[in-house]
Length: 87
Image 1: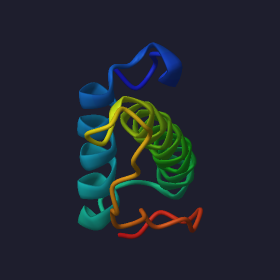
Image 2: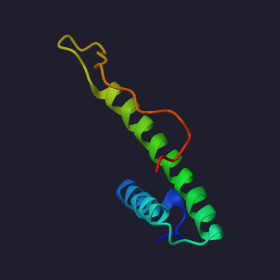
Image 3: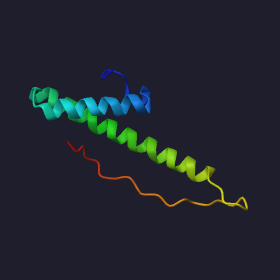
């Protein structure tokens, strides 16, 4: 699945691949080159997942209405915005 374009992955596939990458990096069994490739792929996955969540949040805001039909935004907790992969 790592060869598949990130944009072709479902949200679930992308998050599962990110979990596998994190486990592989944490194991310490990868060669330097593999670690760098995995880290780069992980950062791209994080960015894609964050963008998808932002888009979904915008859709939810559009769909949520208060009783008289006007738009009502529901308070929520913002996602982290740093562009780093935490392992």
